[in-house]
Amino acid sequence: MRGGFNMQGLMKQAQKMQEKIQKAQEELKSKTVEATVGGGMIKVVFNGSQEMVSIEIDKEAVDPEDVGTLQDLVLSAVNAGIKKSQEMVQSKMGDITGGINIPGMF
Image (tube, rainbow, N blue to C red; front, side, top):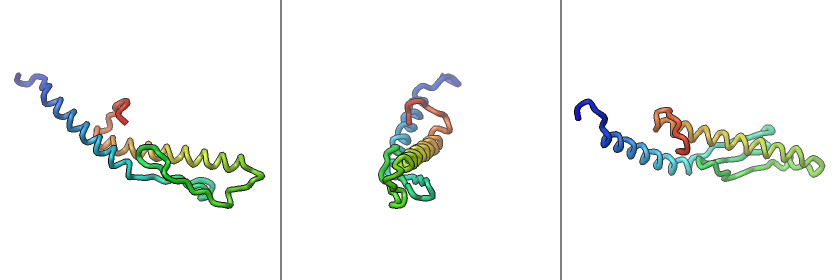
């Protein structure tokens, strides 16, 4: 079929893209991002699977008389880490998909 729709070619392209995405997802598991808050008092590290892999809390951040501030700092650090991890994933996947956002893909 000349100049027509090439379903076989489209399926091959989709399969190649899926393979690239799977490879990227594996690579992202080993890549990390770091977020710090409170002047470095709280540091979290997330991987590309949006899993927190470490947290460091400076002893100066621990005040038994003000637990609320520590809770707020940890919450802020975790949220910032998740956001950075998501941005890293979107950037990597955007390279593969040409910037097309495929719902449920990542």
